[in-house]
Figure (cartoon, rainbow, N blue to C red):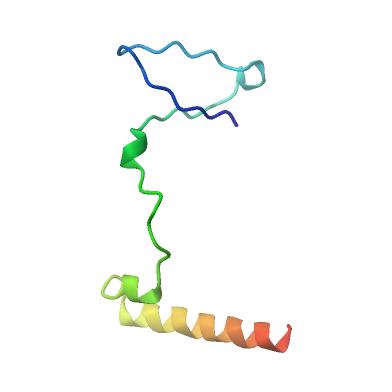
Amino acid sequence: MERTIITPKKTHIRLDIPEKYVGKKIEITYSEVDEIDRTSKKKTMADFWGILSDETANELHAHVDKSRSEWERGI
């Protein structure tokens, strides 16, 4: 993977593709560095309140409880 940050001086950028990517599908994206929120806090279950249905939330909660139980028992 190749990644770099640049400050363009005009609307056109020349892009040289490394030989190993020739003939392969590649993805090229761009965004302003300031647009990317790198300080976001970790999500908790409370952040999903109202997004998940009660049924899905209960299933997820049961799965988490089961996983914790298995972890504690060393399974």
